[in-house]
Image (cartoon, rainbow, N blue to C red; front, side, top):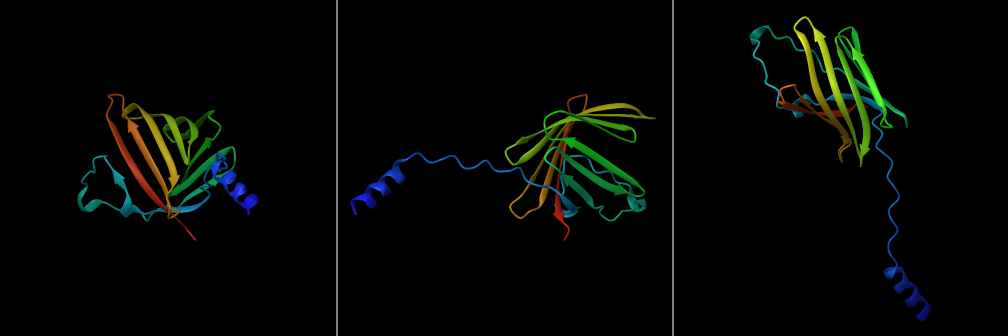
Length: 165
């Protein structure tokens, strides 16, 4: 009895061990945006009756220990972004846009920060970009992105994606 009591007291008084470090979440899969859950501070234009809407495009995410890649097909073009997960710079060029970023884990969120630079017939544009990506308790992938223009104005978008089965 004394031995059992002594063991119990020791277990209670010993400092608890730090929990094993959690592995970062795996975002791999095919996702579709829940457009009804979208939140944005961007102004919404009024194009009238001429507006055509496209069905939501699948976003395919592949992830390894070193990289996370997203791909989405818009009409006949595939928009692809590849991010290094070790803090080194990633450069992604899609059409007139160049996205230069660095990504790092902040707890269970993947945070990507950098610049988005575009050259079009309307001129050049530069934005500071910050994107946070995480899984909520239901398994949905949330992607919160803020864009700050050269004048210092910031707009943000939060997208919610459900995994396709």
